[in-house]
Length: 396
Ligand code: RM4
Ligand code: MN
Ligand code: MN
Image 1 (tube, rainbow, N blue to C red):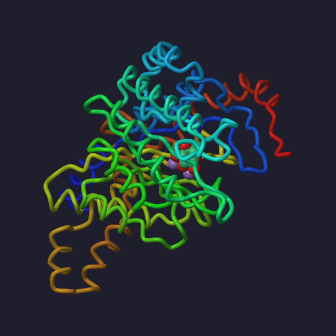
Image 2: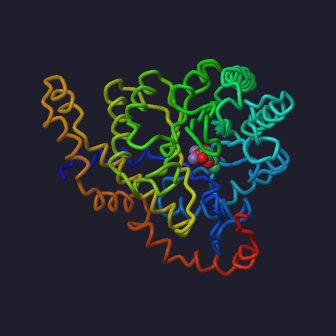
Image 3: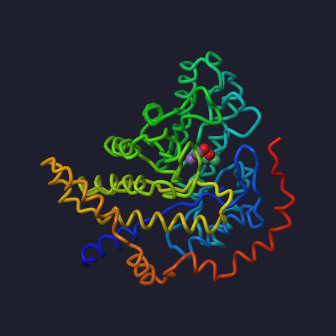
């Protein structure tokens, strides 16, 4: 590889940051049950400790997304504890995720619920989360609304749009300057007939109604099969409306599989759209890259390391695209040449170059091997085994 290309890829790696999800270290499962792992994290301290392991070997994950109900069950009273853990493990608190989907009250929705008392409860929780984000100096508030309905005619879809419009305006009104409100969309599950924020168009419209600090969050798992996700990304970039990603991979639905495990070219194409935008405009796209994965079968820390390594490879490959040549080929409709700009970059084996980059930063050349050698996994297997085996995992 020539030096210019290496320099481009190294620069890209220097700035790549990916946020880890606290829930990715905990026992999670399918709706039919959980496969409990002996080493899963069951406390917020363990989640910080595990995240720090991933950051230590990759150097790319300085922050941890928090799900308030799971990680700060006492709300703002838990902020001090989180700050202490953050200092202890050298990991920043990342995006703050309210939880308006788990409590019994939210059976028929949260901010879109026809019952004003339940809407109020959901909004109050989200407003608390804005405060928590402020106290923790976390920039992004990142709620996911599971709201929807299961049967035709059972809910008034337009009324629920109004409830959401009012709700997001109120949330936006509570934001401090500099905070961002990321609106995530998902076409189905847990609701199976209609979901109130089903796609990027709905998320975009609600973000516009909310105000200038509201942006769209793209969870790669939340799309229909064969949907062109990079086109959605290109539109949101064009409109200045993309705030962040939840990365994971899918084959059928919201499978939460390891990023790039099914379709690495998809992730590459997303990264390419972002880099192409930056090259053309000269502006850096301010997008939070976050992982949203549940590893039910793979070891949780290893799965995160594998994810980050994949992200680095695909991001480095995207940095190799010859943007000037591509623009020229596109303007002349030189189809094969234009496509080859992407294919050539994607087919380059960047792994040796990433190993050199890592060593130049004092990081291990092989992060997975470094983690395996560290003995951390064996230690937590032994320490956490008993508590995890006592956990309930049944579906019915
Ligand atoms: C949802 C969605 C949210 C995540 C939850 C756990 O499908 O992706 O972002 O917080 O799962
Ligand atoms: Mn998500
Ligand atoms: Mn999801």
